[in-house]
Image (cartoon, rainbow, N blue to C red):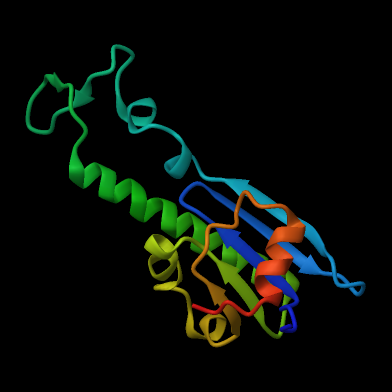
Length: 147
């Protein structure tokens, strides 16, 4: 079994949970955040009440979702996650930390983090653990399934 990092952060597109490893080896939740960019439907964020999307260059609306808009919302979501990670690491000041996020977003979330944070990642799991129990998250990090 692997030694678990003192701080563990798990995230997906719409949620982040952070834990501190306690002296008895369990996890204590220190933060949990939902990000609207990752959990709300695009139509809930950018449409008028009848469900139409604004169209640039005209006074009308359209009934489709703009792909550039979807990409921008994803970028915003990743930025929000990174900002929360930086805040947690600044508050906790761990010597090392662990991160878990689904493989399709893992690198995008970590991509723009400062090297001082990247260099201290002890374990980076490409797993979606954000809705898992603390015990399941702890087991995943103990099993050293580094990806």
